[in-house]
Length: 163
Ligand SMILES: [Zn+2]
Image (tube, rainbow, N blue to C red; front, side, top):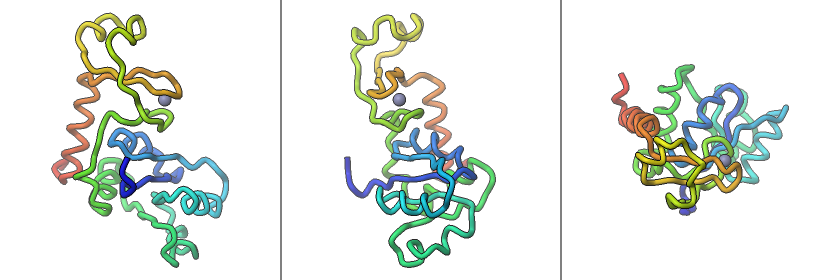
């Protein structure tokens, strides 16, 4: 783990970004509390970049003083949102897929075929080689075609080739 890898906190108005950023290997939590103050405080404590569409957030004292970083998301469209985050924070070179659980944001561990016997559908077991497991929820991940298609799409978006 490198320390310069940004971590994020997403506001409810850009909640969709949460899983996509995890997919790209960025530690991201979805803020479910009530107040903006709580969210900004959490970002400060955890050293997380706030992603929001709420124009009031960048005016907060902790943000204007430079203690907390905010990316004010411009678009409603998820592809544009991903592209904005990747571009503004220059993330294209540090995308790392297949390292975080999409559901609980925990690191995935490598599993051998023997270890996941009986835990995945037979056709997956037969056709896939690389498996990962979430230490928290025990979900098993594999680099299936769906996953690969998503990553390809993300990489294109990062390069601005989605249009
Ligand atoms: Zn999990």
